[in-house]
Image (cartoon, rainbow, N blue to C red):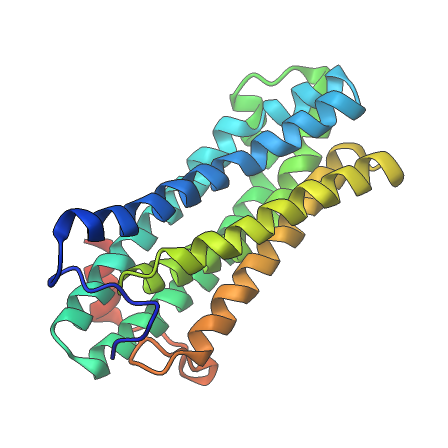
Length: 242
């Protein structure tokens, strides 16, 4: 079941293995936090104070909603890793497909919540009237791409379950660079303001999700993803939630 991207945490020097595993993971988490920051910096520099305030006002809400679902990906990481360690290929495959399925459905649910309840949430957060329309527009577009964000996170959790933290980092780095480039293009060239930075975010997240899914579909072990086998296994879902 091992491949050159897997990391054996049982054998070999523990400190070295922990370092190899943890450093890419820390950079991945750091890069994810920079997505919203990049949007804020670009609109603040090239659009103006109102747009800057509009994007900034969504930060805590975006973090709250995405963190709930992203936390589930940690559960998926634990379950897949446990099954891999037990060399149960059948259950490992079920866990992989259940995890990606949860990412898809969770992303759709998050998108619906964001589209229809973003203004309500902004109102509850006492967002000023002069920026609430722009903030609402940013959130609605941002959450349309929630499915990409969750699929990436759940797919990355599967890769991390066998010690592969490097490829998720590479994919997120590509996505982050694309996000910055598209931010500048949409804002400076197309003058799209907050809509541009939100659109840039979902496009770049779509790329990172596609890279992770493509990787899983090419794996040679029990973590291989077959799209036709995507379904929810109730027992494994409860284990992930627990």
